[in-house]
Length: 172
Image (spheres, rainbow, N blue to C red):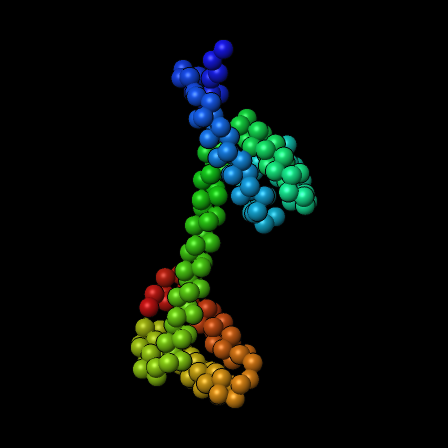
């Protein structure tokens, strides 16, 4: 007896293809399990699927977790996974953008600490910035670093640069 895929009724789907689809849905379910509570709530999942995902978080043993993920994969076969994939892609894209912005700010802070000319360039690109405060923090960071003190000023400089950032402002 030939089996048919639920989404493509006119084509016969091989057992290998069905298994590949099942494992892909299971991996998608595993990504859902790893989401923070707030992002999971935004996913607007079917109640039964959402409950299974929440239960999977509490499962500690390897085999029980594997079975729970299989169950999530089975539940996902009954829903359209495309919107879930799109939302997960948007979430990871947001995280990637945030990570890139964080790395860009760290690089800017390091340039400011390494080269006094970098502050002049920064001030030229950001006329509203409090250059005196930034210069003072740079001096304090250098002093703390030489004295072996905790990096409080280093973090404060990062926070100041982050506060000054508006979308797309700190590109270099």
